Image (cartoon, rainbow, N blue to C red; front, side):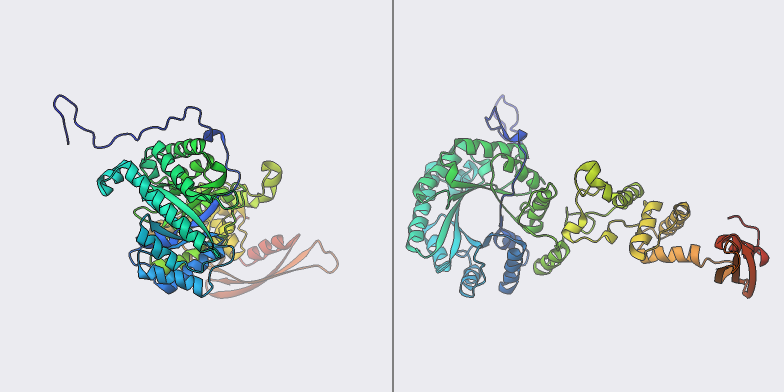
Length: 508
């Protein structure tokens, strides 16, 4: 710990500085439209995998991203490796890029790397060249050992080089994206200066072909509200907001990437970069599935299709050799699962009364404990309620009804629930639906005991239909008994047959 004479010890950590924005507007806003979505799975996500994707796996991943609906896909860092260079060429030469998709190539603000990038994207119909440079004093001083002016000069030189090469590739629709890396650790006014300089140097931004300014929380050190403050401040001070797209890129070091991104969208963000399932360096990028489904659950059309999410998860697990966390929002196996008895009962009742939701709540889906319809992401109802020692009678009855078509009378629920709980406590683990069915069969349909129902045939009297003739075949301690008796209904006749069979006393 560093100290100076007659001063307090230097703290290990301090609060991040606030942004001077006294009349912030974003807290009073609501997200009304979907942002532009940009997947960085194949670059930012891939570089953080223990075993990076091979070319065929990368191609399969790219096709999946296109099928989901992404129109901006960062596919490679072609100047950084031969594999990325070759993959970029393969996409172009073999015609894998849909007409409405922009592929994006990342490159540092260095002349020879930019030249190599343009070699990789030769003959590309439409694409984005993404240049970046770290702009925080931490990076400028400790990594680059230079000044802010030196950093700005590098960015301007790179933007000019990309401009000249893009103009030479006249048959291609090439856009520029610029990222002041570590934006949230950068002096906000310097971030504005360098972005203004890049904008002026590029010189080709318009409403129809905007410059993308990507403002990343490269390392999450600030709370989400401060990221939103920085975005609003930046938007309020940038001189050419009508011909740029403000892009967001959040990492999840403090576990708040989704929240930070949503608040930054309120503050002026128009585009979001992230990955499926939050893959990426350290704790990962913002999970685009969670973010998109959050918006869909508020009635916002996102343009992304996650209706077969279990299949998507299986594919990504296969390609990356990394599993999806059980409780990952929307994607995890337990994302919509209730084990608690009271939760199970409320879900079952809510689904049975779902038809009343439009009139009562002015929306078609309103169910306790389920903020969206699991079917929207391809989740089956059968997996909603799972049984363990904490489950209740309502959950057990739900499983029998949904999976086996058995509507257990409500009066039986307590006995059935007790039988299943007893079994669960003995096993100490979750009970499969087949086990619940077997418990029901053994306890209530074919219980151990002296009596076995072999058959029962009720029929109305030919002259007086109110009289029912019952014929019962009953096993008693291994011997078969055939008896007949009458009653004023099928159940009454059955009871009289039992009494004729000389069974023990019972109540109905």
